[in-house]
Image: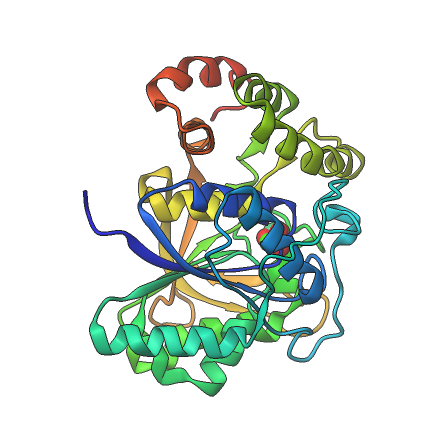
Length: 340
Ligand code: RIB
Ligand code: CA
């Protein structure tokens, strides 16, 4: 078996963040070194408690949780509790984890981990599934540490798909557009990142990943305990999607970032120079120069096509620890109407 891939997950748990963490923690290829939490769906102080709850469910309280930035770089902080519920995990009411407590210093943890990786050559990847405030601070305070970065997979932004916070802006980049822009600029200017691109898992691909009631029922049939966790979190999320978009089911954005990290064949896209608007009507919009107007080198790989069935097979097989080949026929049948 190949060596485990070292990752740090930067998140704002959040219902789909929770599902993403469950997928990552169920995947033996990953060595999750730590979880850094940023203000986003919920305030960071809530997010760290939720991260601990998820680690406890998965029996992984050995993984440290670090609290990060509590507000965006410049914009007033706006949470997404209307989407994720007041606790950030829908209607789920799990007790506070007391066996371990969150640590301070998310940015310092990222910096020290990446700096050590740069020395050893055992590079670390970051899967960023919340606003990029922690990462922007990292670029501002410790730019040299990016020599230790392998991949950055960012759930955020959009290319041709409409926004979810405005006609053109996706929440993670809209919540802190200055941070998102700073990270994209880091991939344009930092020598350590000269040959690398942000792998942007935006709404163009995540909107293809819909957890429907039927799929969720199948999960519950196969494992009532995991199914109940997912059901209790996503009931609220499905209600939001019905009221907001008339969708039966819920778009689970963040798990696709983890799945793509595990299997890059799940999504296809192209590379281009990309930046983020930080003011005005289109604030938070990821602006993709696909036609190369600005003659700037690509700093981003924009994913535009996904394999929804392939994702669900991976997601279910990992969470349930079941053979993908056993699950695929039923998943294909349950997804008959929405598989592209
Ligand atoms: O726009 C969707 C993204 O914003 C997801 O990461 C969700 O958890 C929120 O952070
Ligand atoms: Ca998130």
